[in-house]
Image 1 (cartoon, helix red, strand yellow):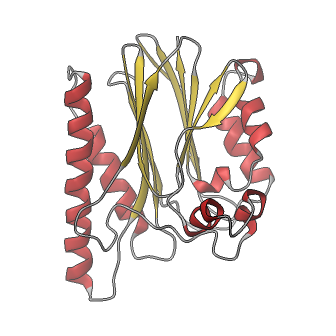
Image 2 (cartoon, one colour):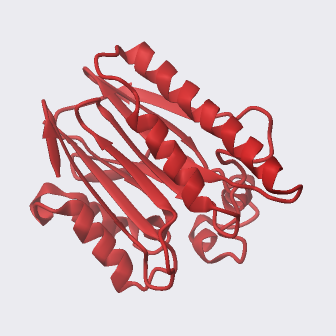
Image 3 (tube, one colour):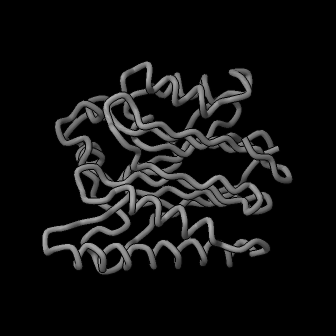
Amino acid sequence: MITAGRYRSWATTHDGTRRKHNEDAFVNRPDLGLWAVADGAGGHTAGDLASGMIAEALEGIPTGLGAAEMMAAVRLRIADVHTALRDEAARRGEAVMIASTVVVLVVRGDHFACLWAGDSRAYLLRGGVLRQVSHDHSLVQELVDSGAIAAEDAEHHPHANVITRAVGAAVEELALDKMTERAQPGDRFLLCSDGLSKFVEAEVLAALLAPAAGDQPSEALVAAALERQTNDNVTAVVVELG
């Protein structure tokens, strides 16, 4: 847990119950008003390299930036990592891809912004109500959006792990989705990899994210995923606005 100004934030990551190493990475910088989770794309080469490069690039953003400068810095640094990962993949071989999802939270004054690519998620708990802020870039989400499958069937679909957008993926320019909104005192955000969101029910996420649940929310959330035998790396970053 780290405290800076009016922010408190917690971060926890774990290999999971079946993986031998962790391809997740996170950024926990309340001093910058900046948090992120990156999940190296499963089944691809060097997912830990991809997520680690994203975290390192964001950690290197200097202090003292205004809201617009911070957003520009986040976009620029992720774009640079995207190019570097594509170059490294090309160097290793024609069929190689080195990629990672990313979800980023920036808070400035009374507003917050979320940027993402892939299926790592951002949630907001406000007034006891949990809301998913991000919208997955995944094959099953496209099927849900088109009405081909029901939302409750998405997590158990055989292609539930197929993402449609990622840092380092085979596109020249990466498009990050963005949403902004006014923040309120008491807001609690959760950034997480799909090792958490695919295994822990929304109502349990809300209960463990609530202040009444205890003083180590990220640890409690990761523990819930491990109890449910998550088959992936699992990472949770929790941010509280004082």
